[in-house]
Image 1: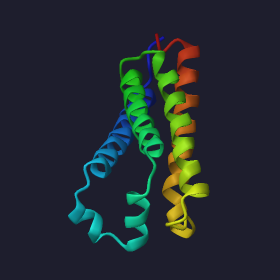
Image 2: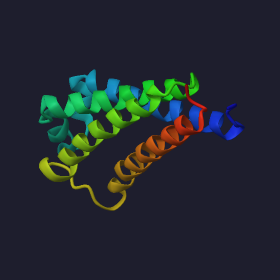
Image 3: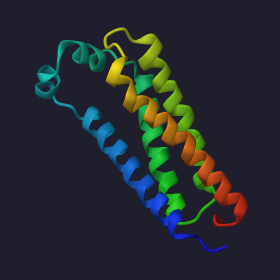
Length: 138
């Protein structure tokens, strides 16, 4: 089955979204002390005290999501599995952010981006699965 224009638009937007996630991860992974000390104190404590497993979950989430998006563009079924891996890692990271760390309160507008990220991740799982079942993805 040939992909529709909406398939290509969603795949390109997913790739851009996940590329931004990769860039955010790299920005945090290579954050200098000068940048860290310029942040408000709660954020300094958050970044300075993140366990390695949370950083690893963040890396897995963004890179699996990015490669899943590339898989969509290449029309590969493995995109679905990469999005599932990305979602699981995202949930590990989100669990830590909302329920374990106690430096930043996730309320008000600070909850919008994490929740949007979860919604988009779930949509990409649904979308890639539907396209695999319909024969768009090989």
